[in-house]
Length: 79
Image (cartoon, rainbow, N blue to C red):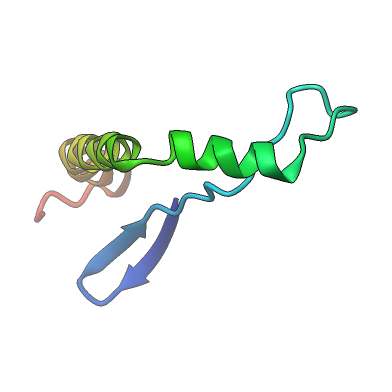
């Protein structure tokens, strides 16, 4: 997650690197053809939908928690 100050508050973005596929054993190198096949099989529309759902839920939780945390830390009750 990346958080950046903005005139209207704080902007947060999530970034995902989905290109790295490797064997759990670092001494084993997977063939390029196998990696391409694994990407094609796993990085599909269902995966994207589930990742989107995760982001929506995560941002929703933060929207609930952060205002109260801000007030507690800053003692600013105007927000």
